[in-house]
Image 1 (spheres, rainbow over the protein chains, first blue to last red):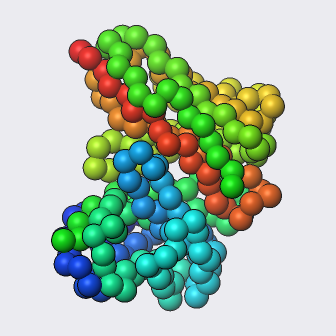
Image 2: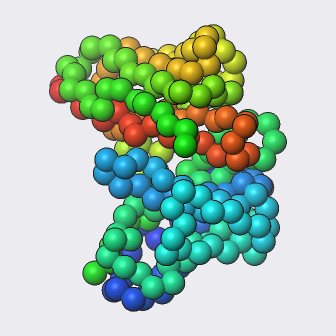
Length: 113
Length: 113
């Protein structure tokens, strides 16, 4: 079974703090994605990566950055957390070729105070 | 940008009833996916559709890829309490960024025992 894990299920941070969200997948997938999910807005793509050291902006990249130093790991960074970044963050991965089903991690519920 | 219209937004049904939900798009998609998300968890893939007209079942779930490639539906037969959750459709268009899905906003299903 594909497994996507996220470093924390729940996180509480203060405004201005630097926040790291880690995602690891064990299926050798090339593509990895970070989304945020908010009530009424659905899933919105923040950043994605097709390969190691490659990254592309999604629909809402402002206030975020990412890092992909290893194929299995994709990190989302909030350089200076703000209250409007309180959200559910979901990581996903997929193959580059063939079926493009994305497999999701369990999510990180981030609260910024 | 591309959008998916998913309906209904929410459903309240009695245990044992059948459920139907659908997604429509203004663009043609090459893949349709259906996910279920339990509260506080990440979305889990239920069914993947790759060909126009394709009808696929997974237990009590049946999904179809519309012949126009612009729509898909998901049916759940004989609903049970554990069917509660949010159901998302997602489409993939190879004309867009490789591997990037477009998500509907979800259908929230409530089942009364």
